[in-house]
Amino acid sequence: MLSSTWNFIKRHRRKFIFAGVFVGGVYLLGKYAQRKIQEMQEREAAEYIAQARRQFHFESNQRTCNMTVLSMLPTLREAIIHHLNSESLTALLKTKPANKLEIWEDLKIISFTRSVVAVYSTCMLVVLLRVQLNIIGGYLYLDNSVTKNGTTPLAPPDVQQQYLSSIQHLLGAGLIELITVVKKAVQEVLGPVSLKQSLSLQELEQQLSQIRQLVEEGCASSKHKSLSWYMMPDEENTLASQACGLTENDVTTIKLLNETRDMLESPDFTTVLRTCLSRGFIRFLDNMSEFFRPPQEDSNTSSTPDRLSHVSLPLAKIIPIINGQIHSICSEIPSHFVQDLLLIDQVKEFAANVYETFSTPQELQK
Image 1 (cartoon, rainbow, N blue to C red):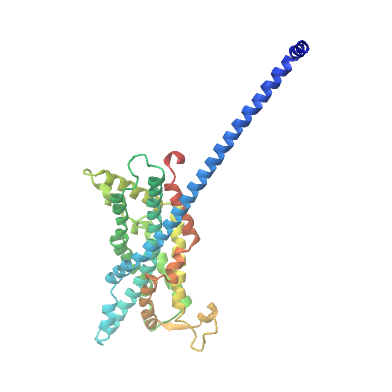
Image 2: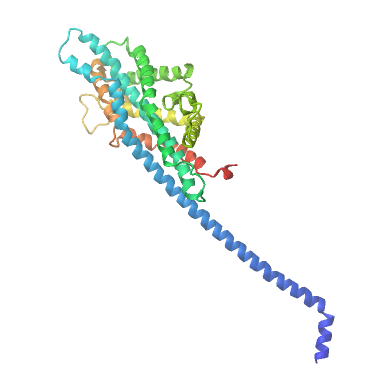
């Protein structure tokens, strides 16, 4: 019995060896596949968690952007009113001075200038803070999620403060230059227009379009390459101009400023800013349309563009309305004007692209 069994095994030993190798191979392959599947599942779970954490951080960062914009609007409004003080002129008119017509002419230019500047600067504030806070947000995500091995933080607190303080250019020298350019354009377009001349909403829109054209074409042909100059000074006017004495934080801040400047000079940023400006001036005219309703119109009748085009107001009556628009445009209480800007899809997409760029480790970018 044992002999026959042994003979059988010897005759078929190759088959037994092959079967053993096959079964062993299948077993090892199964264990290998199981381990790889487990590793892949763990990697996918880790990637999902990381992506969810990143998305949560991004959304939180966008809420911070919105709150920061709203918190800075009163400062912007006060700066514009300080440089374009129409209130002193209106107070002077109440005293019935001899040069009343001259004061009205000054009030016309200042009122239009400060409303146009308010639209430009508010749009700039929205998009500039979107860029700056998403650059910082991306670096903070890397600091908290990637560089926990004792390396130098990409955006330490001192650097964040120094970098974000560059917004003062828009509220200071940039705003003053913007006021100068806009005021010149307003003078050229509206200077010859009589205070008694009546304008419809459509004609007012045409006047604003001419002012915008002069401002934006002037930027393209002057020493300032684009509207981005009003948001950030030239490189030689920043910390980079210091030949020596730069600390490590200064160097990091300069790097952030240069990266921001590159973003501001990109075609995508130009497109986003133009979209904001178009939306801003549309909302501005919507606000003005409330004052161009036909007298007989009741609250249940809609104001169509055709009906509004037949309503005209003397320029002298439009001036006080224009003059007060700054309080609606630069309002820290969420208004339709600011909400429209914050909810523009192109702004959201651009912010996501900036955050994606700066929250991705450099080795992955390469």
